Image 1 (cartoon, each protein chain N blue to C red):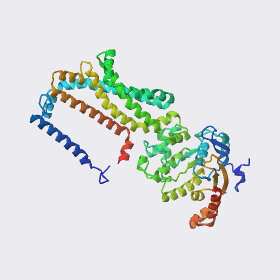
Image 2: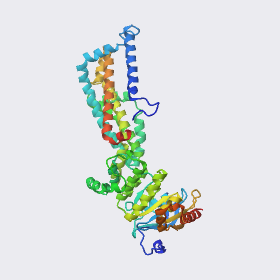
Image 3: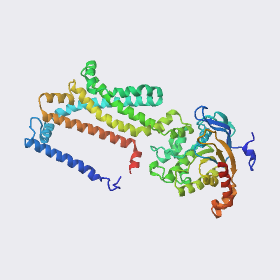
Image 4: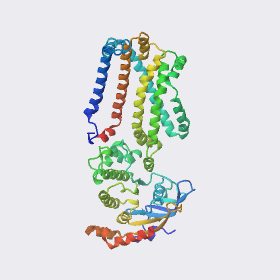
Length: 260
Length: 269
């Protein structure tokens, strides 16, 4: 949409303002380190971080591959589980009443607290990581989908019934497409949880992955590499969110028409 | 009970849809909303239900559509009992209820596709009707790209494609601006008569009822007092006079119009 109101920021401003903010912060950080305001052994400068990122690139890539595999696998299963839970909760009121509090309670348990347990139960391999990611990612999907299904206009359901539609037809023709927007906003949150969840679980035990790399560089006090891996993790999360946005645009062509 | 069709001047025409002695409730009989209502509509006829808000007009339409089962009484479609069975009568609400995720053509084809018709066949059936419904060129658009009047016309086309010869309309024009509303009323009445559609239209607007209807049922009930709604009276509109007046002047300025309106207002109390 074009800038209509006087208070509506233009597209250029929307990009330029945060870009300048980041640039100013980076310069300030670089200067603070170079001028010795902050000791260099505690805080590496941005240029040092970039240098570490470049020199360690091949190693980081192999660790990132492990993390990405865990994250996509966990997210994929989490979405399927969340979707199934939401469909059952929408279809059967009893399931909704039974699962609704359980799902909420499950989210109050800190990830860091159950991760070591999962390692104890399932070992140092892929399984505990994927399980942890499934546990954290299914929730936003299930909750947003259920609220999407429940937001269906009851009049539309009545209208469908006067057309002789079955429950399945009402679901596929009206409820599911109507809930897609909710699904994608949940999925966007789940995507960030997936990467972070993978890193946390690797932290607590494993043979490769960005979390494993992170614990190693921390132990050798290589703060420049520490920052490099943090940047890589944010970039990966952002990329995954972007992927969700692209998927949303492809799946919901009518949204684009509304925005034009 | 004497059938209303028999009492009509045309005489002897069997009603397309008939409600006999309906008693309705939303909560299984704890609160009776509507009691002992009988009404009927013939093919090509427009019948309006007028009553104060909250008096149970929508409840009646729900029962006629089969969405709710009457506590007592029956709904007959061409003589066959269809009480509590949705899918036989077309129903259209105040909101157009177009599905935002479907293109206009897929929206209007929804009843056909639900009935099991392949999509391509449904499109082929609907496409020629777009011009008649004033929707040409909108087939591939999304509902959000249409104006209010266009959306409502698309909803009418969808209602028409339900393929039933009885249509129930719940304040179909109230979401539109005044000029569009007048145009749409005229357009609808013409189309319904051409197609031989029997229409039951809810309206809270007495003028709309007098302009559109062949007959008006005035409903009487206390919206708050819990007194069940009954039919207070039935006002016939001389359709020939309406059409004659529309040809030369505004029907709403004729004495016949004023007389009808007065009668309705007196019954409303």
